[in-house]
Amino acid sequence: MLEKRSDRNFYEVLVDYGLIISVIISCNSVYTATLGFITVKRIALALSIVLLPITFQSLRINPRVKYIKVINFLAIYYLYIFTFFELTTFNDKKTFLLIFILFFPICVIYVYSRFLDGNVDVLSIRFNNVVYFLSIVSIICWILFSILKVYKGTVLYSEWSHTNIINYNWMHFDTQSGSLFGFVAVRNTGIFTEAPMYAYVLLCALFLELYVNKHSRLKVIIMITITICTTLSTTGLVLGLFAIAFRVLPRFFKQMNPILVITFILISIIILYIVKVLLSQKSESLSGMLRSNDFTAGVNAWKQNLVLGNGFGNYEKIVEQMFPWRQNNQSYVGYSSGLMNVLNDGGVMLMGVYVLPLLALGKCLFKKAIKRSALLAWMFIFIALSVSIVPYSPLTMFLLAYSYGLCFFDTELPTETHIE
Image (cartoon, rainbow, N blue to C red; front, side, top):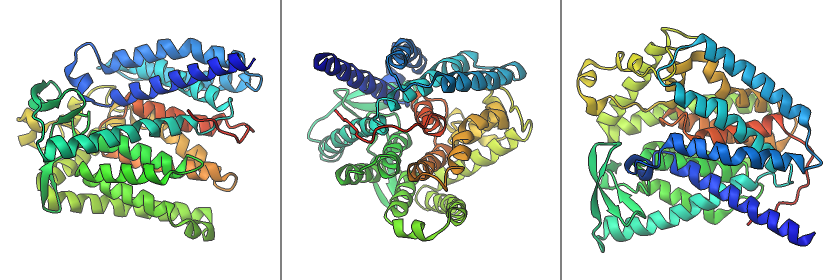
């Protein structure tokens, strides 16, 4: 019996880490941008094929499973998403089918199967273990290779940015330089195509470590925060500091009622956006202007169809609302707001998939501390997503699935957590 349990633990660890590494790589890494055989769609499809039988086998052997919850969730979700499918138009139907019909619901049920084992935060801890390792490697490589130049990499052409980047034996890449408060240097982009993508991954790990994991690890928080600073990302820096500030002021939240907490958070979001624009305009004036225009273009495009959007993948509607000089220069038609992209693609109806965990977790403010913390975590991720163009990446959908697990599959589980 002990041997069977040991074998099962080994396979659980293998599957968890395989899933986590894959979703991180899929988030605009250099591998997906330069290696033709590794694409986001192929990663999503491969993970779906692997997770589906594993998930249902795990549910089948677990005595605590409540099939009625699984059936209810799948029935309601597919009714909602297929209604949207019938009402909207598509420029990229394959991505929609892979992410919303296949990958995302499988991830939700997989998260539920992992929660049933009694390891409520095991997935987030293992996710942070991987990001923590990437942080250490990228810091070392950034200092030795990018700053001190002790080793010269090779030139690699990036299909994503259409520019040459520096490749250090596929462990680290120099893809951008930047400035923050007058400090100009090569940005630490790790294995990603640009610093904002790396900052997004780091921020997600930081939010989980601060608000979801039962026992926050100081060394992980410090390393991730330092790495965020080396990306020279104003978004990462400001959001990271806000998240840490919220975490280190627990007495403040205990003395306030939930309504005041929500009000304070909403005010903070507005302040955060203002600070973000000011910092961008101060350190990277062109970047600040482009982000502001991205938001305006996204709102104007969305207003053409508030409920259903302009069709999934219809990015041209946003481009039409950009500055004329951007429309005529392909180097400046990139977009930076994931949430506005969702609203353009699917309006309020598709955005409902992302907002539902916030509403569901918000109802639990008076009940369980873990869900109050999860609300903060997902709210911070939601904000980070608003300035990162990865709304349909497997990483984002995996984190969304995790929040759905906390919302809709909460059960009384053992408190002991086993981490490998």
